[in-house]
Length: 515
Image 1 (cartoon, rainbow, N blue to C red):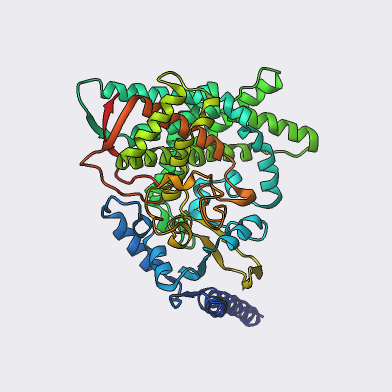
Image 2 (image 1 turned 135 degrees about the vertical axis):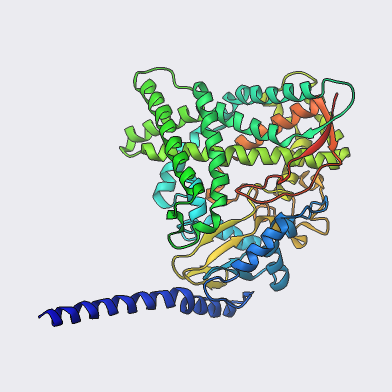
């Protein structure tokens, strides 16, 4: 009997090992080779598949090399910011692919196909799981299906024009503090050289802290400081995230990350519960993002009996920082850098601001009259998009244009490369020419612009906070132009490098003069 039971256990063990071995073989070799053949038959080109690693080694080497050196002061940043993607597209053409481990990622650059992918968001969804993304960004950004529909419906009122307008004075307060800080720095005679990036980055966090949490502004600042540290810690662990079970290895960074996450959630729970109790007691609801979100959520629960849970609200609050603060801060700093290198446009923009507002306070309704500033911001968003790419995936065989895309393939819409594409934007595609937007976004390219200009993505999942970001950017740029002229410092180092957004890796050293 003992021998028989031993044989049974052995047979089961062998069966498990064989099954695991087959699954591993299929994942690491058979499936990638099958997908490679399929993609080549559909006209895609790329490097031959390498066992397990794919192109990751070459990808990491190129990124490390690019990050370690400065680049010339040029707007042609794709070879430096996304060196491997630039290399593959240049080598194999617009219909090419790379290997992200055993998963092929195909590049799609045709405007009509891009519009199709972004409009069919239920068929082309964000790949799940994505350990690095999911460790930092949750909420509306990563949700899918009915959960996404429900969350977007609840959150949308927070970004209605009338609510953004009600937050305008709060935004203005944060911008005024930046101006005062710079006026103190430049209070002596003559120009002053310093790195403006930290103060612009802080202003972005300050705006989101005030507009998100209102009276809980100080707690909001603490939350966003922790969230910023979480981004740094996540990138320290990036290589670990993609190892099977790597996120559970107790490194110093992973321990700190978990401690921060626990503290972050506890703080947000306190703020949200305090605000919910105020609403239940009939107190006046603040016009900040959290207040409007909770009011909208309460309405959803009353109407349908199903709203956002506490954890859902926590995730949306965490998303406010990355999606709101990072995006707008980057837009503002790259606008200032571009205007530093193109003084004629700095002069035109300043003259327009003075014509509309004089040297006094700005008002919300006047922003729509800043036509030149809007053209400049669109051109900066084209050259330095806050999100350098959009990634989608297939879970079943899916038709795209005249192609069939197999299940298990990821699709890259390389926004930075598309924004710099000579066929779409002309021979001056990598030059700063705001006048290309004089007829609006729709008329900026021969294809109609909408499938070629994607700073906030596109389709139904277009960034819900894009109007908020543009109002804040116009406000900040106009106030800076009223008070200062600026140019690049000799110590400025040009290095846009993608993290979650596209910050200046070595800061933004400028020479400022008070007007």
